[in-house]
Length: 389
Length: 250
Ligand SMILES: Nc1ncnc2c1ncn2[C@@H]1O[C@H](COP(=O)(O)OP(=O)(O)OP(=O)(O)O)[C@@H](O)[C@H]1O
Ligand SMILES: [Mg+2]
Image (cartoon, rainbow over the protein chains, first blue to last red):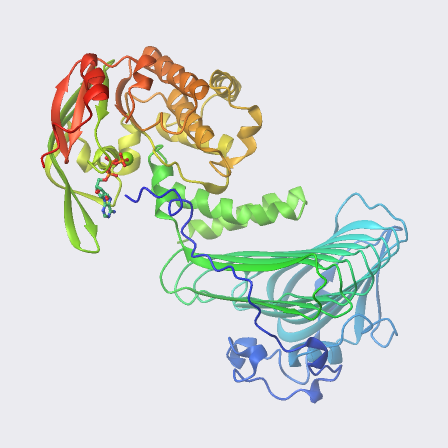
């Protein structure tokens, strides 16, 4: 037994450092609303290097079906929800696709689901957009969220059922608005889902953006947050749990393009079973104008069995010296035997001890969503997945 | 009346230099209600003995027996040993992120007794035990040992001792790193558990100061992986005055 209290703390190999790995500047990255401007997807491209194109189930095709029929919602005075033509000038104003699947979604979704939170509205109950699909044909969906000035609302986008979906979610957070958005991916086996989220945060706004990915053969989400006004804050959370054969990928990017903004990116994942694969690429760019930036990004992965693989790459590029703070950390590791021993030494069986440790690890992130009903549902999904290994 | 017997226990660990024998034939018998102090120099194998009784997977028993009322403890898994009534207060309790103290205590109690405790009495029991150990009630919602100070971790171990009510407790340097007030509080907790449950105690310590608060019936001098001498409480005073020199062969 090592008598060092330090090694007894946790089994995750820490990787925390202050050196910066440069990333391709996002503004330099080609972007287009037309799928034909992007070449065929290949693992040789940096953006797709962790995937084989056939895992996309056809989402990279030029022509996709539409998804309108699979989406249900309730529109209210405070939160108006309706389908508009994608030719509407607002559509595409927050984000322009930077990859082929996002462009395919853009090109093929002729309608866009517009969700407008009224100015100064204080919306108490979470607004739920339910996407309960039975729709294996590869299809496109475009969602546009506007949180108007001084509004405060919580929005949950739930994805479930059998589907192959190329999706764009644009999020316009206006001055002083507060928006809490959670995207849940709990697809059936056989599903593939590739989603590009684009958020713009205006002056003094606050966005809490959370991802929870549990079901689906392939789920790949690229949430981009851009600060356009000073004093804004984003909290980006992610929780995922990959079982055998699942590929769950997240590529959060925070673009500090305005001064005195704050970002916190926290993603945690668990993996179990053969060929369970997770990818986390966390990019933060602090531009010259972004003085007073305060940013921290973190990714942790818990490998529950052999045969699983977690890739985790934090990138931080800083173009100004005048920042408050910038840091990142990434760690992937096994169960900590000392934690399991401690619990077992209190009479708890090894299976229950593992469950407690994994739940504890992931529930931390679930709780950050601040939506109690969701915490319960997601906790039970995690418990169910844990029970099956 | 229960008995914990350790007979001719030999234990090895795997090191970078190969297999190393650490316990070299330990004999020790503890009966319900007895308090045994084990004292010995650093590295003599005291924690190894404690972990071997609890069943830590790092340690391999190559010879000898541990019997609890005649039942072979070595055949039991770690959690089965705990459910059979053995308790180890660790020298360095680990942090468990995301698992709250209240959830942990309830889960452990349920595992030990085989059924969930009645909610109302359980909440009161926990509250009383916490206040007895001067642990702030906010600790219930904190994660197990996360960010606890050294002294808070030790109190949390004794909290579990009082709530889980084992038959035998091994306290591995529970007195280390405590200031005088905390030492008193922790000792009172051990004494309460001792009286309430006729607990048998194996107390590993470097210092005689705790023996002012917890009176041992027997003192064992532990040197180089076995018991070198045993006696009554007076042996501790002699050790304090003379050190271990005469037991450690040159
Ligand atoms: N996993 C291990 N690998 C290598 N050596 C080990 C291991 N565990 C214990 N040892 C060695 O076994 C010996 C006994 O260790 P142990 O922790 O039992 O001593 P101790 O009496 O509790 O000491 P202390 O008073 O410092 O707590 C030491 O020499 C220690 O280095
Ligand atoms: Mg020790």
